[in-house]
Image (cartoon, rainbow over all chains, first blue to last red):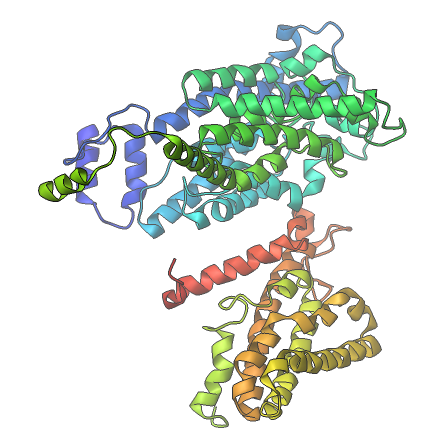
Length: 414
Length: 215
């Protein structure tokens, strides 16, 4: 089989469909060709390995999201169970069945449409299919509500991949994170399907207005309306709350994040500074409330008085920090720049979350904004470094003293 | 085109395609973003600019030898401003609703870069007939893009064309809406125009590779 595929590749080399074939071929087997000249680094972590590592970190979130889809659906109908037990109420086949019938189609559409476009562009442009979409395709279903209509998702994915990535030159050249571009497109194009208290529960929109109407408001949604929420701190941490498919479980996101840090795929600098940024903004808001500068009738009061560290447990903040902000292509490249980049992502996320009048979440907007600023940050970091070294050079004493002899030696050797 | 010599015909043909004021010269983008959410507004805007640029180019061309070059910009502005006021008053008199939609953007034709650009680059150096053709050509080139953008934005964003519900009624769920289709709210907001114009630029340049600028 392996040998046959290698022969096939040689036979069709240079043909129009060759990139499409090669993509599947290298996905299954290691290529049998090596570079012949020059020095090169041999390493196991090629782009495919990198992408697969991230997908592995995402799988727990995906599975949890499937169970949670069912759990939220049945809890909205029958009420939340009183003595919650993980195995009796959460990890059940019933829940999984709901999850797999709602979430799996999202995954399939996301990959189907996205990869089809990638293959199309590779064949038209005649380059190899790039692996960038492998992660994007997995991220997208995790950051949208369970009942997002599939045709909307398909349009959004097509938009995100073409306008967000391919027009800039494909994987590695994009300015904006494609997954978040897709999310932003959905948000601005179909806001009724992306916000409110119906979309987070399976069948919520379908049943609206009937006697069987069900709803599940997110924690942030309740806070934005100034009302209370019924979820405990541990619910928020473990993720038994309504929200986008894969973003609810902070525990599993943290585990995924640790895995990415130890495998050195994602930058811990960005994650850490983003957490610090979010805490800083939360503390400022808490401080304003504690100082009594904000009257209680203000519509920002409940969101601003939300304890600062709990911002990390609700909404998409944790998911965004771990899996989106650390995208190596769209983030800052310099180590110092990563600190600024991450800090502002956390800082702005919480700020937008509190002040956004239409929708109490701002992680995707904050990350997209910082994606745009990342090159500028890097530019100033590099410039600052040059300045520092020039200064050091000017104040340094140089031994031995420059003499005419140096120049004569140079001309001799030249 | 027996009416026009080949050279004159090119004055109209070029701006329509290979020297389009919006997609090639990238002028007049602001109004293209602002008023193209509806097809009707796009068409009225296109006609207004057609009038202002056509007449303005002739006027400037006629007095081109009398304008001291130091104050030519002011003279040009006076000419555009008078023409724009005429357009504005006509719209207010005969299409009041529409003039409210276009609001400030009719007045802002004065600052439309295409108009000043054509005065400076063409009318000041050419006779009235050729200037007239050039003005018409450029205004048509501008109008074509406006209408294309307006067509897609209104069709996808509101499901209508010239206000007629071509895709069915979103409230009573007829036509396309009965199978779950929904209007794309993104197309209503101005950034969408930027993306549609971008796609037009992309298509145009991949069809005629000579237009691609060197990086």
